[in-house]
Image (cartoon, rainbow, N blue to C red; front, side, top):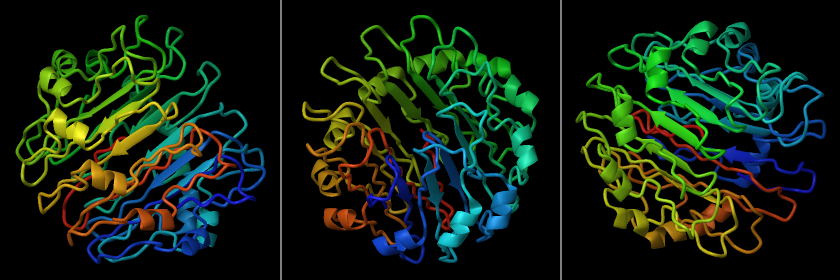
Length: 451
């Protein structure tokens, strides 16, 4: 998962996503296979700050997206060249699904697919996240590099300020349609149109879901502006992020369709006492029951989605993902249980910029993973120690699936699998994200944004 060695360039990350699915099997249960699969083999000429995230989904048809390195190259996911600088990240998400197969099981194909290809004109720290979903129709979005360029996934220009991110998540679902297929509509929808008054480092993530009704959320730039997806103003402190995930599900309804209710739900209302760099991510899921999580601002405050206080150190993030699933229940409906689960309780010895993301999934059995702080501590969700370098993050997403089993239920196995074993040569500010998907059973547990 990450076993830094001398020959590794500083700041590399290796994210291994092991999925224990219908077969109850695990992908790459040994550290040796992790090295063998070439999850990350940094080389000297690579340049710093680039990230490439490739999410392949093998769904109802049991097919895989980009099963060959050639098609991966054709889609232009990212092809690294000599001018690349150190600090690159390569995130390979392998999904072992209904067929029990793995994506890119050999290091050669991983190298051949060349996940990353920075070019000279690109500004430092740019990120390009392309989420391709191959669903009921078995089709892929943007199968050619030209269309990828055309859709404006990321086309840095001179007037763009350093460090901007543009994340476009297009979902091709039951209707086989695509959201914002043209660069003009992408610009019109304000996916990212930096202007002079915008402070450096802002991020705007718009996740549009085209689901059972074939409708799109916020299809016009006017409502996008009206809902306040991102309207930076003078009083806003630098580095704020506002992520609004609207889900149009079985009822064809939208969450917070008006700017007033969006403000009422407290999606993000920065105030003077808020410390710089805080983030509030509220994921409302409108599911089978057609209900919304935390429909009032009071309950939003009560659930402690984010209530920064004086003792909180700068730059903390608390991400609470509540899933209302088949039972129509909510995870951690009270602030006390939220505190008990240790969503984030920063203490004096904790180094600045730590993040603790706990994703609890209530699945087919209606059970919760790690309902007590002791088990959470035991699984090593985050146990900062003196020898940890500043800004490290350890995100462990344990999934209780069809068999009711858990992945890495003991801290020893967590250490053995190398979920995160920081060593002296590691550079500060790295992140490790482990994502799991419950697919073959028809359940969807993929509501987390790419942050």
